[in-house]
Length: 220
Image (cartoon, rainbow, N blue to C red; front, top):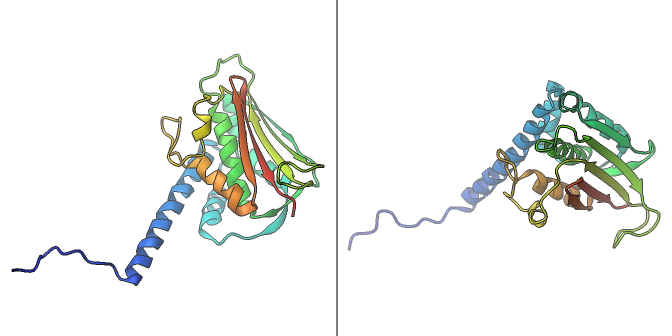
């Protein structure tokens, strides 16, 4: 009997490793381009900031202590033109001495994505509706669930159209999106950064009056 020409071949360990690396590269590329699309929509994105976004995913993550208000103000500045065009008021309520320990680049991704989503929430709103995005922080004086006192809570809220009740359980699911041109990876990546880079957690509340995301960064 003639041997089968198209017999199944098992890849070598080296080939398997190469395939795994290519798969990871593809995953990273999706997150990178999702970040860039958010920033480019903001219209004020400079080439320096594009480079920063790329490096934040291609370089190894690093832990540092950073001043949270300073980082938030930098991110809000990239949305200034978009805020003017959409007549959105951006409010910041954050004490100047609040600090976090972790990857500041991961923090940039988290907040950029949530603010961009807040802007998107106004697309289907009545033109007379007050359009406001509020970024605030607070430090807990007592335990929050399993998290000890000293937990930093970052909140991003908007007065947009809200998330449908049936969609809320799925917003952190891979490939789930309510946007016509969405990729379904934005909030998935946000959740991963919160949990893996900061050992924190994220929650959401939403109604017809707007949406609020709360991110809990545990005390060191």
